[in-house]
Image (cartoon, rainbow, N blue to C red; front, side, top):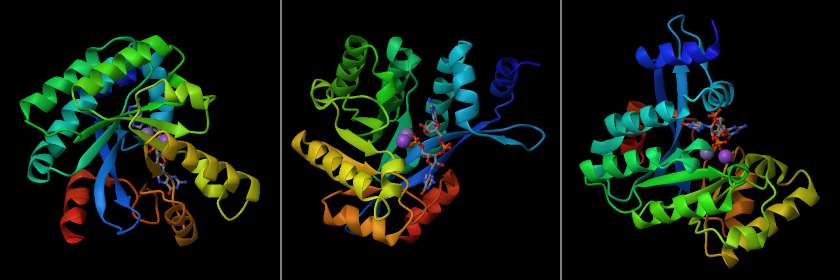
Length: 252
Ligand code: G
Ligand code: G
Ligand code: MN
Ligand code: NA
């Protein structure tokens, strides 16, 4: 049986769910929101990660159904929580196809409207590598901006974007890939690259989230250089919705 038909079956059986990795403010350690990360638990108990099934879904025309599921799950898990906590923000990952056709974006607009969520309570992440069609990307980002949905460039540093290219895209936020965070305090040359990324983001007026923060040393370095937000195992791994909400209440 092909993985594509297993994904179809998984969709029918509601085997997909989301985990939420807290995003924290580096200055205070307070949770400001989360990134939603898709998971697939098959009947046999096996958990499959998006690195495995997203590419298959992309290549078999199933990705928009998965993105639709993601929006439906965020609504079920988080609409109430977001309504009660108007400063909280949940980020979802778009795939390359979600840029080509605006179906996913429109479902997101409907969900936000239906739940009367505030400006900036949902964010969309696009990876650098998806930006191969700048006109399409700019068009989608314009639509998202019109609906008060901030857009983050994800995995920043792993693609080929130049400063001028980034500047031509209406991003609100830049997520520093964890490969760069890992190198802080270990590899002098890569640490310097992180500093360039931070400076560039500041010049463009972008919020910065550092990903994959695992040590207090990394957090210290990022704080000292003006990075405001972070996610990573130092703070929390990704959590089931109920654990995220319980954890949030505890840290207040
Ligand atoms: O947590 P982790 O191993 O699952 O995430 C692996 C990668 O999969 C991340 O880089 C993330 O961008 C991607 N990913 C996670 N959830 C989703 C999703 O809902 N949709 C898409 N397109 N990608 C996702
Ligand atoms: O969208 P994206 O590529 O950024 O998804 C985040 C990925 O990073 C997920 O696979 C998540 O499980 C993983 N991750 C989150 N925090 C950490 C961390 O502190 N260290 C490492 N090595 N991986 C992390
Ligand atoms: Mn992401
Ligand atoms: Na990332």
